[in-house]
Amino acid sequence: MLLDELVATAERVAATRSRLAKVDALAEVLGRLEPDEIAPAVGFLVGKARQGRVGVGWRGLSGAMGEPADAASLTIADLDAALDELAAASGAGSTAARAATLRDLGSRATGREQDFITRVLLGEVRTGALEGVVTDAIARAADRPGEVVRRAAMLSGDLGETARLALTGAPGELESVGLVVGRPVQPMLAASAPTAAAAIEQVGEASVEYKLDGARIQVHRSGDEVRVFTRNLADITHRVPEVVEVARGLPVTDVILDGETLSLDEDGGPRPFQDTMARFGADVAREVLLHPWFFDVLHVDGRDLLDEPLSARLGELERIAGPHRIPGEVTADPESAERISREALAAGHEGVLVKGVESPYAAGRRGSSWIKVKPVHTYDLVVLGVEWGSGRRTGWLSNLHLGAFDPVGEFGEPGGFVMVGKTFKGLTDELLRWQTEHFAQLETRRTASTVFVEPTTVVEIAIDGVQRSTRYPGGVALRFARVKRYRDDKPAAEADTIQTLRGLLRG
Image 1 (tube, rainbow, N blue to C red):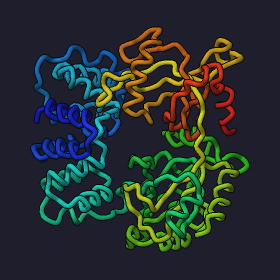
Image 2 (tube, rainbow, N blue to C red; image 1 turned 120 degrees about the vertical axis):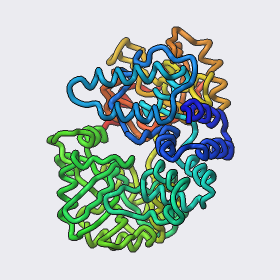
Image 3 (cartoon, rainbow, N blue to C red; image 1 turned 180 degrees about the horizontal axis):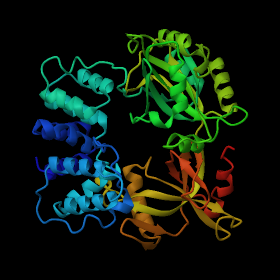
């Protein structure tokens, strides 16, 4: 199949808000793919190429594509093969080899194909084709039950391979996909609630556990062989020898554990999130050690526990990994849940997770059985610039550049503003239309992607916290920022300060 057909489908999906229309468009194109095109095409649509990261970033892409072709000729297989070449390039001469591959690829791609390829390479495909939508489209195209397709995708951790099995596999092959020690599964996800008491009222008796500000890990052990995966199912075993050592010391032969890892300070408290992630992402040993904490077990010595209630899984977890369990209590009392939440926050953690004791492990699903509770901070910040949107938001000013007020000039001119992050989250169509008109009147300069504006518009932003940053001059960046509302009642000089945000940094 020509890549242009896949790009056209991605554009149609991005242009509609209807989930049904998205599924119809995706199912139609999936049903026309050749067997060896299925896995690559699914990866392109969800922004996760099967090759993973291929060593190309913005700097490597800048100008590398060259002039686009006049007519479409590239196939899905051509792009997949080019990504194989990029991923294989290593050692001396790898930069030149990647550049040559990109020049050749770009010379055969049309303008919109170049744009699509760039987004695939950077993991920034935003078509609205989320994995859940694509999974439904696979089921539609293959005429298979949705639950069967979803379970196979969850337990294999590979949506592309699941699509291939669904569309071309023998009868029963898709249904036979099961839990395998050493092969990561999609992690169970949590919904949100404003308070621990509200979460208890929703799920009843629950395990109320500390929500650590660390990195999600999934640990597989078969005999002496241990593999550790991230929440995105990347294998990072070589980066976490201390986690491997803990896993090898457990009194089991085969096990799959779900948990978090984080670094601790000298007093046993959690270090800032950035410290954990810096160590977590390091390919060489660091002085900062990572400590694993487990909150669930999916398999023990030949026994799958996915469909057993949490109460049974926690019993097994206590037996095999008691010293490494995340702190928590089982309770049905809202006041007790609130007490545990306060204790977690006082200990420097994010909040709590409230998990129904009768719930199975729903891999890859965000249901109502697990509920996260953590405080949400809101701050009034100033818009410094706005990026043009893409996909369904093409033609609208979307991604906001956010600045905090610097009254004393600690990071620039006194009375100026210091950039602390970006967000396009929380913007309704009404807000997008309004801000496109509003900021056009405040423009001071622009680039191809961004309109810079007079720093006069105040917007209320909800965040989960901040982290240290070398990217922004104030040394701080927002975490999970989203728009609450615009504050036309507040002048920019009354916005929250960079000093206030820096005060949120722990340590």
